[in-house]
Length: 235
Length: 219
Image (cartoon, rainbow over all chains, first blue to last red; front, side, top):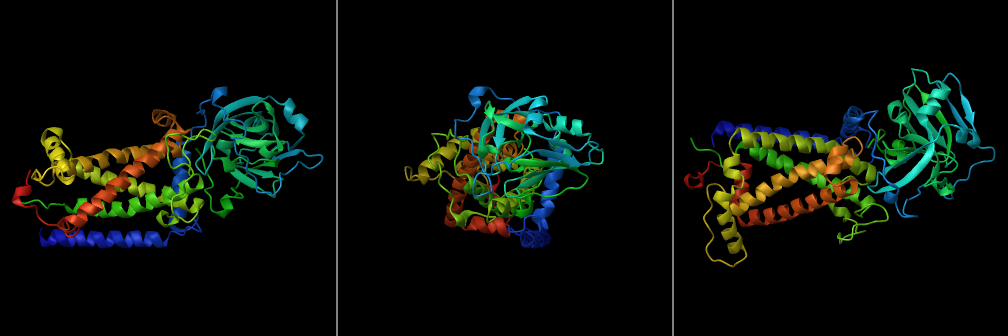
């Protein structure tokens, strides 16, 4: 090996080590939205938006693929199962021409759709259930969403659990406000009276115990997202 | 003109890979901690012997699930880019000829080396050029496993947007199992690799500061 290639090798090695060292210093596991990890989250969001096809449907699965009874987990952040307050109604607002207040009966009168797709949890597990309800795109049409709205925020009565989405994922045909699971009205452990369900996001984006849907021009956060979980979380 | 036993691009990508692979494996194991079972909910795979066993914290990177996911998806790109640089060099330079397993040249030699390593044969076959047949088989196996690792990871990351890839691997949960099995295979290789390096320290110098190949190493 000649002196010049050895010098070149050592210089490259020193540079690479320095870069990796700086990269490592800029990686804070407790603040994953910051530094190098945050930068790469933004790169990954671009990748996720680029791979997202608003017309691509997740495979609809046959009934026999449904997870065994009780095998579909039911997560919440409240200590006790949250129960809908008396006079519960869903508020649809933000940048819309016609703000709506919908009771459960109102939602049942809207066109219903069924979706049975694989559910992907951020923890790594998957499960399958069928969900009946109203497409969010139908609600957006009824409310008359302003073209300036780019994001949708979902609020709940589960101790303030919330999330926010990009508009395209929210308007996907397999994103619904679910009123029933596996053919029976949604139980209180699965988010009764109405929960968000979607084929194109990780589970923590699908807010249960819904109280409000707001179409917004700016991006907000979410319960897990603000603590460090990825905001886009598409699948 | 003599070639270096390990050209500088091979050495740089080798050591970068060590750092990147450690980060990927550690953060991957931390993600596994969140749900240390294989198979869909309610139908865990029966063949997997470690259902529910959490990887030890000392082997993990990222601290918690969100931290580990950020590490994993941040460094995945660098891990793949480094591997692509190596693969492009391997083929563009012709280095693949003295590194990859070619059955006609290496099969008998690999078998003889295996018997020798298992103490079933006294004589070790002489290396053919840079490596013996067993080394070529192991290194080629790693290169064949790496794409499986990356593709199964992509399938898990985008099971809905990459439906053909996910279906090809048998679905989301199968991809997750393949991802872990590929890691286990590479971890096994790494353990044997480190032992072999300790037994043959000269190779560590070759991979670090470099050395021209000896005449008998020319394939």
